[in-house]
Amino acid sequence: MEITETKEGALLRVYVKPRARHFELKIEEDDVTAYCAEEPTRGKANKELIKGLSRLFGRHVELASGFTSRHKVLLIRGATKTEIEQVLATL
Image (cartoon, rainbow, N blue to C red; front, side):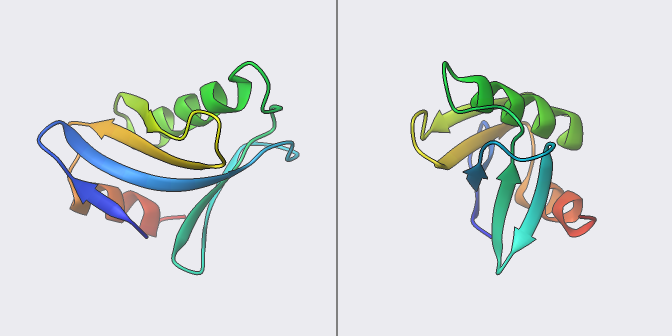
């Protein structure tokens, strides 16, 4: 799991698999994988990912990099590495 702490919050690296049955977040071989129900057109999967992670962490989430890639880095504003690890441990 790759989590980097910055002054704005924590950066979380996520691999996205679009066109799943429903939104789900899993830890697979020490990587965070997000299954998105939306298609990867016009940013639909990105919007679903941001919305789902915002609910999970209870924080503002924004896409830092990977707008067109399946490998994404998301900034979770105001969060620490420890807080992110604790939430992901409950999955």
